[in-house]
Image (cartoon, rainbow, N blue to C red; front, top):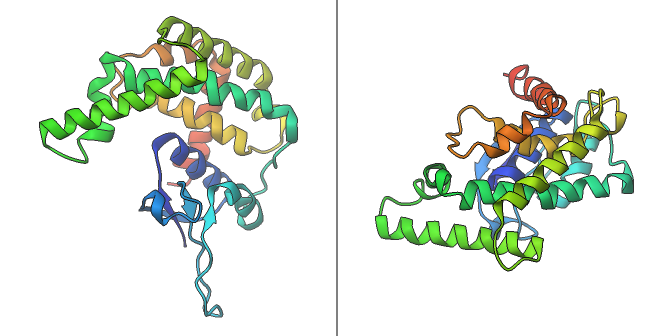
Length: 236
C-alpha cells in the first residue's frame, strides 16, 4: 500500500483524486515539509516488495502524475501539452484568488477557517488569534501579489472567478472530461479540487458566493459529481 502524507486542502484533494482515478491504492499519513524530498507536500512512499532490500525512494509531487500513469490500474488521459496552460492559469490565479479570499479573508467564513486550520492546533485563545492573523496575512499577500494590486477588491475577485468558470465550462462543453479526452486526467482532478470543496455539503460556508457562481455552470457541477461518484462513492 502506498502512503501519501496529507498536505494542505486543495493540493491534497488534487492528488488524492488523481491517484484514485488512476487506480493507485494508498493511505494517508500526517507529515510536514521537512519530511518531503523536495521540501513540499504532498509526496508518496511506494510500497516495498519482499524481494527489495532497500526502502523505495519517496515520490515528490512533481513526479506523482507519471507515477500514477505508470503504476495505476486504470487508463488515464496523459498531460496534453501547452494547450492547457491558459486554463491551468485560470485555476492558479483567478479561481485561486477568489478561493483564498473566500476561505481566509471573508469575515463571514471566520468560523470555517478556525474549524479547519486553527482549532485542531490549539485551544488557547491568544495562540488562536495569532494563527488566524498569520493565515489571513499570508493569504492577503498571495492575492495582492497575484493581482498586482495594493488593496483587495472582492467584487473584482469574484468577477475574475466567474470569467474563469465560464471559460472552463466552454472548454468542457458537453464532454465528460476536459479537452474531449476519453478518460479523466490531472486537469480534471485539479478542477475538481476546487469545485468539490466549493460545493462540499460538510463545509459550513457562510459566504457562499463561490458556490452561487459555480452553480451558474451546470456542466461544471456535473463534472464535479462524475468525479465524486467515480472516486469517492464507487470506491467506498
